[in-house]
Length: 130
Image (cartoon, rainbow, N blue to C red; front, side):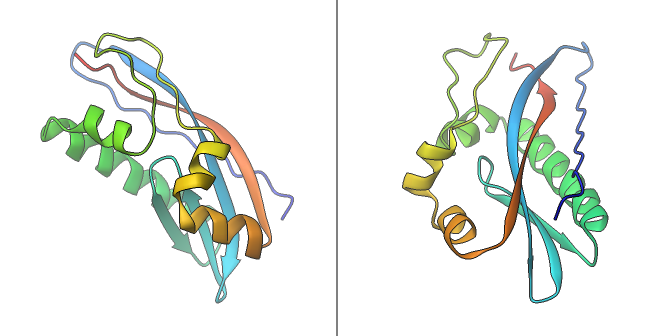
């Protein structure tokens, strides 16, 4: 699994302000499906190829963030997943580390200990919490 899995997500509010966050993505195969998993958001997608899985993940990620914004639950959702957000006006947020996630995420434990996976770090942009 040496091919690089690119990831991009750009969500822009009407005022155009965005926050940048780094996500760790894991890609692996299971039952002939290519899977992309993001433990920091507990989101995954699959496809026949990693390119399909990546595209599906981008859609799922974007839909999830937009839904949370509409319901005004984005900060709560991120904090529930272990993100560090000191205030709503903070320009930089921090996704949970792998060590923190391993202590609370059984899916990630299964991937790391039982799967042939590749880990990729990618930056994504999200609307600023206003």
